[in-house]
Length: 427
Image (cartoon, rainbow, N blue to C red; front, side, top):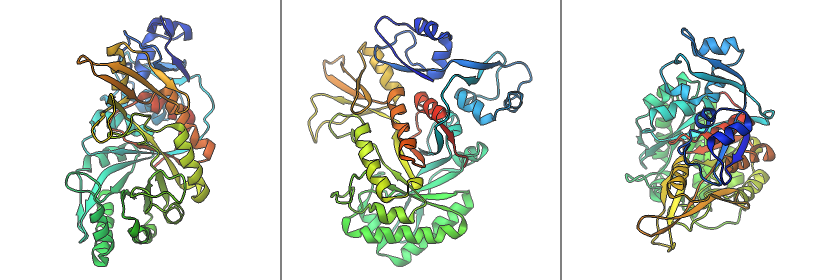
């Protein structure tokens, strides 16, 4: 895998010629939104094939895999578009093997999805996942479980060997985290016991293999009640062979204050949970000052604290899969960013003919443009370089893997880097 950054005057053809590959290979691998209008500073991944297969009449995915002594998952990870179509098509070229570095490590990769994910995006993403976390089940203080429409996603996941994890969160009807709902459940012993009973019943009925406790903005005075709840869930699930995961705010020390942080006790929760997700993203957010969503320097600080108090083999690093476009000037309390996919961010850069810059400290790309109304904007997003930098922190810190928030858009660079660096754990 080579990461190429577009320079002034380069075209798709000239870049392809430089590496001895076809322009079509670059377009397919990167799902380029702007093949005829490359942007200076745009990064793309170059994969130089060593083995390719042209599909002929009668070929099947399994048959091709057996012919080359690889797995069907390997073919799907090298050719994600195949998972989104109904069988192989005569004349298509499959990438079987390519020049690359040795795999660095094994990684557990979890992808978070809403029930309304595009089925084609879902199918393309599944081969890169160990588990899929389905967002999100709610609950009441009396122990009623508020379910989601998840049957299709669960079935598709099992077809691809990717079991589901139930995400549980105290959410309002407007899908906002609700501190009061969590508090009312914590102090209602009968309601809490009933909730855990209902969680187990739902998991067993639908085939969930774990629950992901995503409780954000918990009142600091409820810290011990929150820990007790996690312990109660773990004590119930563990004998059944089911996993307990917990999502944790991105802390850099045990002394951090504020509603997001104080109830998330890393040592205590880390000792109970089977797996924890450190939510290392949202430094740049919808209502916040423009900046990278997960600056590498900030992420590194969280991981340094995390591994000092939690077993490394339990830790997943959060990976953002989205971008933000802020109108300028930014005014706190007034300005709201627009959420984009990373591919849309590249397309927008091409639309406005700008140059993409790269922040070396944050290890993240960004650009400025002025829209048709004369309003200035800044866009921070992720590309192959930033994903490569982030994912290499997993072997550096000897973490268990990564949790992708979220998989609603397919971002080729993320998955090509993951495929290059890791053997992905089976679910």
